[in-house]
Image (cartoon, rainbow, N blue to C red; front, side):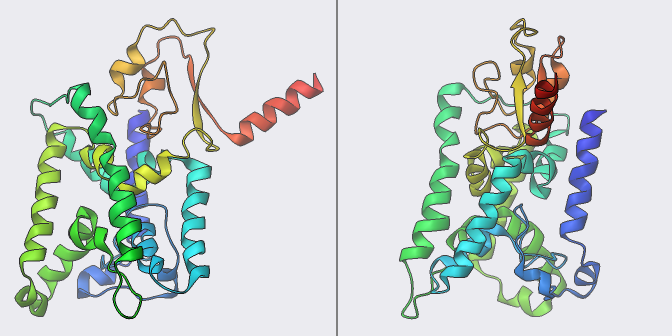
Length: 290
């Protein structure tokens, strides 16, 4: 039941972030004032239905520019999202995470990546964040001081799925203009979607730079998980249930946790709870009154 509620929230978020239905009908991009506002998830600016800007795309666009105030706005917005929700954004709001989860439900034998391979691969998303999102756009600039959005251009499967494919399919002129780069991006998307049938959220685990960024805030975010050690019997069911392969008993607020709540649902002793800043404040006020 809890998973169904989460899926409903994910679906509603996908519709909300891509609410410009006319864009899908006419094959054109929304250019209203809200396009200057960053939303908390990967959601391609070029998607015909997108009503706001992708934070990673925005960050790349401004890193090489001289408009430092806007740069701080984008980074500050991302940090605010991270501090408030951490990777709960990945678990509840991200459309591409939702798509991966739905594909994973296809009934096929699943692949469990061995820890000695899985752990090093987890660092790939930080390499993507540092190199493709930050370093290259910042330092590889043209004579006008502008850098290319390397992540969006060479890797992002979300942009291909939400922006590239719909626009190409709906515009004959774009169909004639596509070349090797577009084929490369489509190939990446296809590989990730195939892997999503076999592995739970492979893009989130290994390649997503936004997930890497939000993960840095998991320990300090307003929303996090907590284990009541008085109730916990260390049966390990929470860790067996976790599809993100988090060592729940050792580090429940790991950078890999997307706050999906499956560990909480699996706990037979109800020892896992979702904490928030507001609840902590209320608890302290109650204790003080007593």
